[in-house]
Image 1: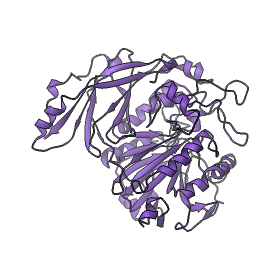
Image 2: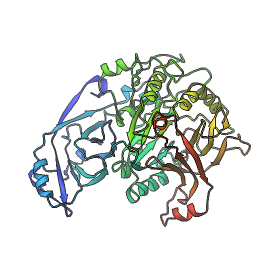
Image 3: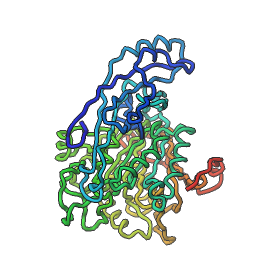
Image 4: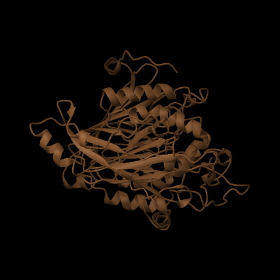
Length: 528
């Protein structure tokens, strides 16, 4: 269970499933009323979805201003057939479920300035919709809301599944911090377009979410930014330095029991540039607002995870989506061989079924390959490569997506800082730290492994064409252009491929401009 101070507050939630026939919802008159309440304290806010480890489920999370609201939800399947009414009536008899309400306040933070904000405990709610048909479309409506929202249930893992997802990092919000995050609003506008108009399935945010430093108003603004699309597509997040990094007191490595990752002390190696970048949040706000797959919802499970090689969601975890297997790592925690996270990663990579999910994408906030002139980040990258690169190569990781450096950069198929024949080894690394926060400069004198870089706000759109190809497009948010495209192709060669030893047989690169931009041209205009 999740609640401030370890307390739990389960809320019984009654829900119904009904099928739509010719645009009319049958059977809802027999369900509880979901009419919007005059009491705005119970109006659902900041609605967002997330995957669980089961493709027949979808988690929905939201916030209310009131503390005594009774959460409720209806969801129904979008399907038209001759027996819709009969099916709807049979589904209405399904039993209810439980919602979980949680909270946090400044008292839960690890350090200042986050713990100095004086705000009442937040009212956060979550519920898992179950018995979904993988890949089908659904609509849902929360109690005390007049909004009907839609989403696509997660497709079953499989090599023929075609999916698309958006990925970026380092977004922030432009209302309170326009000078620091001038591109955040444009990112929200363009990603909303992709999710709503182009049916993008999934959004992945690789760390540095709100830059709130404990300020609940900044968190609320960020959540309002993403709600137009996170309420329609699962919003999967990773941990960045601005979510987790903290220090307590004068002692650099002083421990703190409130750390939700269970770490005995903040990660701050002498060679790194780790500090108090979360403003003392230490992951509390992120872990409470975003419940990711395999999350531990009680203290006993979390404690067990701290002494082994277990998943530690939302810090490190994994999930399947169609033909892609995603691994989310925390570069704000120890990833050296022998660490808890490394043990989990090594065991996890060994067990991935590449016949079922032929594509393997690793998401991690800090990049393993860093462009000039970012010296301190390049030092961190050297240590990350020393810990992870041989493991990634052993298990044929196809794509590594990172943020942290506020620009776009894509490597060649690289191993040990050298471009290599992708039939033998290597991985493509992409940095997408250009989601909205103030951009970083890039020097022209770069490494041989850098294929393309640009200092513009934007995001990545990735399309997996079953087991055949994985295409990443870098889209800029000042004009909607596709500025860079790379396509990976799989070598489907039977047993070796299924064990992960078969790999890409070639990589196609399309330079910026040309036909790609013509296809991406849009009449949509945004202001930053």
